[in-house]
Length: 315
Image (cartoon, rainbow, N blue to C red; front, side, top):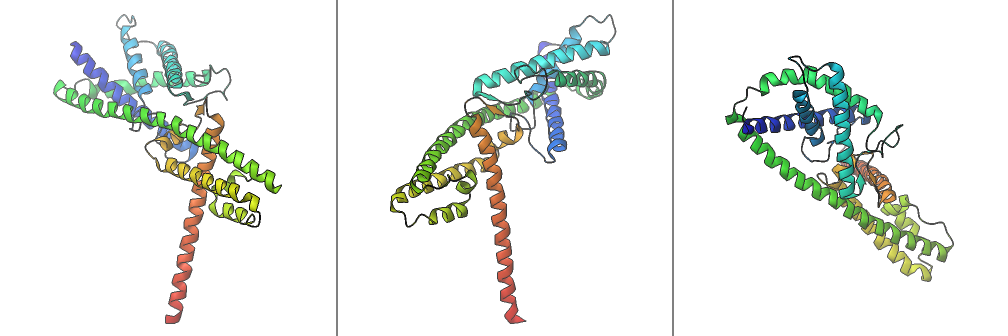
């Protein structure tokens, strides 16, 4: 096999196993969370860490001394466990250094290493390696290995272009997530100051996040302040900032291919700089979605009532 043919097949297996890994992640999330989530750092249906892991594993298996026999199950298990754990560790560390965000976190599991890897998942990677090398790859190789270069090269080229574009878009989304968290963090701090000042003036309890996010609750709470002249300026300030916070959260929630997708894809994501803001943002998005559903339900009920009233004279 020429170097070009080897590179073409390597790229083919990278994309194929990256896509299969994405499918596994989606199925795992669907079983665990009872909903479909586009898992992975990239927007497209591929998890590069699986593609790199499987290509690296196949390369290692080919380089091991075999004396004409295939590697034993134990060898595949150990090599696969060590290799995939190293890839997961390095990948998690690099992403953390780039974006100051821990995209997956095993801190809740025993004997984890920095939250990036843990023995429980390492054992699963070892078992998965045995399954892939001994069962899955031999079946796929029957169809993949004979593919001629006339098919492989154009296929790899098209997939590579889409992959590189996806990497660029996803990297921009990850950078945008940090920027949005910074903006929300600043807004939360200003809202806290405004709410505390208002509490000082009126001698009442500080407004909760639930009140600030719900437009109706906020207006009802602020309506009680109409007679207090010394609270008028703070009232206006709090209203403007609450509206700005809601608009930023709604914009984030509508960004299905950017920050919203990343938040859904990595439910255990941890931010070094904005840990509290990230947690509160997740909670706020859930609250806003609930409010939006309630508003839609109320609008449908109102429309149904109005329609019933229009029909009554006809009867």
